[in-house]
Every structure is written in C-alpha cells, then in structure tokens.
Length: 170
Length: 411
Image: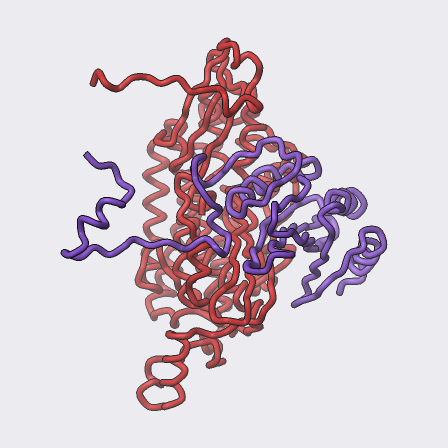
C-alpha cells in the first residue's frame, strides 16, 4: 500500500473504527453507515479527494445482514491517489445518509442506486427514480429480481400468451 | 386530429425543483425532447422558462435504458463483452478496452506489446471518430451544415479501417481479454497511413470554417461557463474538465496500455465556456493523430494475444491438431473461465471523460456485478447548473458542447 494511503487508513481506523482490505493495489475501507458523511468530508477537506469518481452498490442476496455494500470510489487529483469506501447495509429497510452535501455528483448517483437497488438515502434532496419509469415496481439490479425474457409463442399457446403481453390492444 | 390536445405539465412532482413563480403560473414549464433533434438522442429536458430565458432545467433520462449491467451478470466474461459495444455507441473500441482491462486486472492476465500498441492505435482512431461526430453535430445544431458533412466524410475512413480489422464498422468487439481478436490484415498499415496523411489538412479545413467565424464565436464565447470547483463537485471529467482549467487526463496521469511511450500534449483551456470546450476537443484531434502515428511507427511484431490457454481460446489452426487445444476451446466457449471472488475498479480516458468499470467476481465464470461509471452521466448532471439565465438557443449550444451520448448515460 502507498505510504500516503497507509496514513489515511490509519486515521480512519482510529476515528471511524474502519477495517480495510487490499486487492491488486486497491484499498477498500469498510465504514459504518453513520460515519460515512464524516469520512467523505474528512477525505475531501484534509486529503484533497475532490472527485467522487464512482458510486454504486452490490447486492449479496440471499444474505440479509449485511445484504448490500454501497461503494464510494474517490480520487485525489493533486496526489494521484484512489481509495474506495464501502458501507455495509442490511436488507431490512436499507438506509444510508446522503452524501449530496459533500459531493453534488452523489445526487444522481444516489438516485440511481435508489432506483436500481431500493436503498434509501436519508436527507436526499430529490428522491425520484432516475432510469426506470416513475410507476415501475421493484428494483432491477437486486439479485432476487429476475432477468426476464419474452415467452416464445407456439400455435397451441399463442393466444394465451398474447393476452398477457404488455403491448396496447384494440 | 381533434382528439389530440395539448396537455399541461403538472407541477406537482417537480415542486422542489422549480422556482415559486412556476407554482403561480407566472413562468412556463416546457418539454424539450425526448424527440427533439438537438438533444442528441432520447433526452427529455423539462424547462422552466421566463419568456425565452431558462430559469430551471430538469433533465429526465432513462429512455434508452437497456439494462446492460444486469444482462452482463447473466453472461460469461467472454460473452459479456458484446454488451459493451452497445453502451457508448460512439466509443465502441474504448468501451471494449475499459472492459478487457478490467477483466485482465481481475484475473491477472498479461497482454503482449503488439496487442497493446494495436489497442492504442484503434482507441485513438475511435477518439477521433467520436470527436468528429461531436464536431459535426454541434455544427449542425448551430446551423453550420457543411461541417457536418465534412466530419462524417472523414469518419467514414475510420469506420472503414474498423471494418477492415474486425469485420464490423461499429459493434467491433475487437479487443479480447489477453489481447485482440486476431492480427490486423496487411492492408491495415497503408489504410492508417493514408488517414494520417490526409487528416491534418482536413482539421485545418474545419478550423478555417469555424474557429474564427464570427457567428460561431457569437454563439459560443461566454456561454455555459463552468468553473473547476463546480465541475469537480459534479464529477465532470474529460475535455469538459480540461476546458475548465484542470489538467487531468488518465492517459498521462495513470498511463495504461503503454501510453507512457508516446509523446503527446494534453490540451487545457481556462475559460470553461462552450468555446473553450470546442478548442480543447479540436486540439485533441491533432494530439490523437500524433499518438496514432507514433504507435504505428513503433508497432512491434509478435503475438497479438496472450498464450495463457486458461483464459484465451486457442487459434483455429491448433484445434484440428491438438486435443488439448480442442478441450480448451470447448471449455472456454461453454463454461468460460473463472475469476477470483474479489472486486476491482479500472478506468480509462474515453472521448468524454473517465470511463470506469467496477467489476466483481464470485469465483465463478460470470461477473457477479459490473458497474459502468460512464462519463456522460455525470457530465450531464451539471447542465441544470450551467444553463441558468441563458436563452433556449444557448441551451442548444451548451448541450452540444457537453457531447452527451444517451447510450452512455442510460446504459
């Protein structure tokens, strides 16, 4: 690990009780949901991590606690460093405090996670779906959400399947 | 026609996004898109207008959402690659590169130098093709029709080169984990040299038409100003960030695929307006051409694919004579190779900015999670900030200068 990152991880361990993992020169720091906003502010202000490069989530269903990881990929332009923060979220009413006050890019990224995974962001200024239609049911990127396919129609079941197809009928 | 009636847009769901004057009906809510020619695809902008001045702009995306991230989870690492061409359809080679680099990082696979050089040549040609589409369409948006025709004429040459190497003009899937699909044909070098010879004069032609054209300047200088701090807050990257004075190009700062061997400049402008973004991209055309020429001069001989048979399928000629090759071929195209239970994030510089891939394996042959950090998504999120107070006609110029690709935004 880069010595500069080592120092940062050490502070996060002391301050926020964080743990970390390393894989192929990447550092992943695990942080409690309650301290994520403080950790992001600390990294942005004290260590110039001014760019929230990516923000996403992973679903580990059927595990329930934790079911989701919310991932923050941060980049420091002045130091040319990257660090990844991960927040563990339980499957029952998943909720994470919003990061929009630290990075405005989190606004759309959190809307995307909300839309795709059904994780709520506490205090989000504009909690609407972003990619799916407003009246969509379910959260497509969850692992218990089927991929879906079109049913093949044959002569014997053509009409039966046609009836439940979702296109407009006369 | 009488059954079609104009419908008023309800303010309700957008209450927290518009000004109070919209609630009393003093300002107007107007839909622009999703079928408006200047939105470069299916983008809907909900505008709050006071006369012709934009008070608020609320982008509505998702019309082109095809669930590529979900689909990739259901395919093996090799087969999932065809989905990547369909993401940002102006940067097919670049998407391939981002994906194969992520897979190579996850499984720890080496790439021979000839494949690296070919990757650089083709992604830089792709960058030129993408910038040409941007230049042509933004010219069209601002009523410079001939530029559009010129740009597409040159883009054809590049697409022909792609067809030569991969058999496809756009959906190439040419880069594969471990190298490239197969070696380039003998005509490749002459075709690229021909392009290198004619293209500099063509750039001069575009610049003669636009750079000092008073109409072009009128429509662009001082429009849609974006300062560096706001850009970073909104995650803006690529030419848009460099036009705001931040020198950040992943090819220079974290060189990948052998970019450190080539000598090129990163154009940076400080004004941050639409014109600065134009200047940065036009200069990038010249720089990309420099890289293509150097890479072609240095192009080493040798294999174009790793010979690690646990990840790279054997060539057709081996399958007929070697039992082992037949087994590898069969295993790789049915089951696929397995990747460790771990996650990586790998990013490349696409024509629009940082194109990142978050790839997670679960020890099996299919990706557990693929997330695409697409530059257009974040670049578009800043539009509601920078159009405030401009005219609707300027919004067209600003939108053109962001260079959005809806396939990149909606995934």
